[in-house]
Image (cartoon, rainbow, N blue to C red):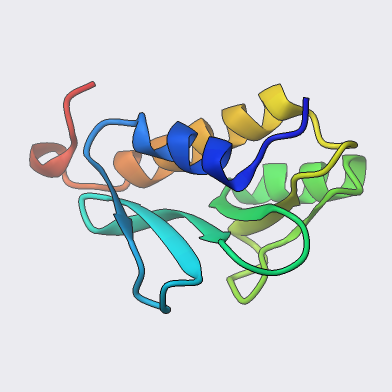
Length: 117
C-alpha cells in the first residue's frame, strides 16, 4: 500500500500534542510537538515525501539500505532524512520513522513540557 499525503498527515496528527502549522506557506505542512518540528511534508509537487528527524547512526544506515530514503532536504543531513513515499517504500517503516521522529523530539523536551501519552 502506498501512503498518501493525507495518510502522512493523519499519522502525525494522531500523536499527542501535535500541531499542524504552515510557517513556510500553505504548500508545506509542518508537524510540531510543543513547538518543535518533527515532520515536514510538501503538499504540492511531484510525488509524496516527508522529512523526519532520526539519530545519526540510523540516518546513515537508512540512506544506505533504502534507495527511497535520502539525507534531509534543506535540513541538517546528520539528523534528518527525507522519505520518498512511493510504491517501493515500506508503509510500516514510514509510519515507524514518523513515530521515531516524534519520540526523538519529545525526548529532547524538558520533562515538564513533554506531552502525556
